[in-house]
Image 1 (tube, rainbow, N blue to C red):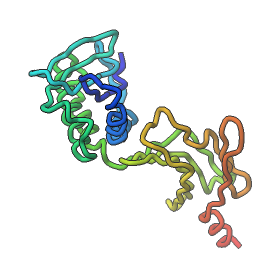
Image 2: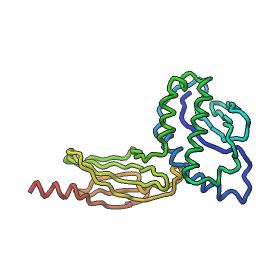
Image 3: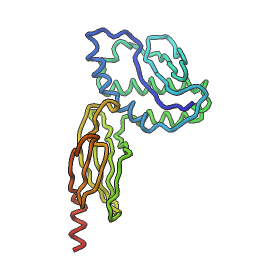
Image 4: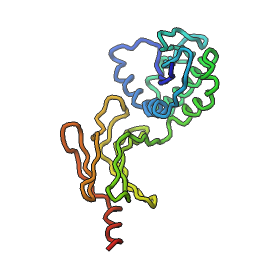
Length: 226
């Protein structure tokens, strides 16, 4: 099996009146979870695809189940009932504590997790730092002097879908296409394809053209050539 995902959850009932608090809490921590997911290396394991780490009112940390590679662990956390009301800083600290303990716990039964434990813990520790995820959307200018590509800026309060234009000298220019709440798996990032038309960049969705950009670094290069 390949270890693909690390998730944070809370082991406690959620009444209808708490759903808004639960969602607000998720917005506070999603950048950490998504950053870890997007940087997670491919690690072969005996029986682990996804590790669900539950903050729990249990007295000890323990593995609860393994359902076809989907492993659940309960991590003892004091005052678990207060988690959804946490501010951003405390929420991130809580997530890091629970994920770190979950990885350490499962490493006792998964040799490859144990061999890569330091790397995985570093991913958790740096999960709240700004991170650019490079999408598989890129295009070189016909002159080969410029290229453009799409990234998602992962930030604590908002995700931005961005086009970056760069030249061979290392100069670059960024264009923000859209900004969304931190729910990476459920959002429209504004474009699926990039094309050059002369010195302009065209962005397309599956159905239509979404935007046209005129990079200033391309225009500046043309002036120097004259």
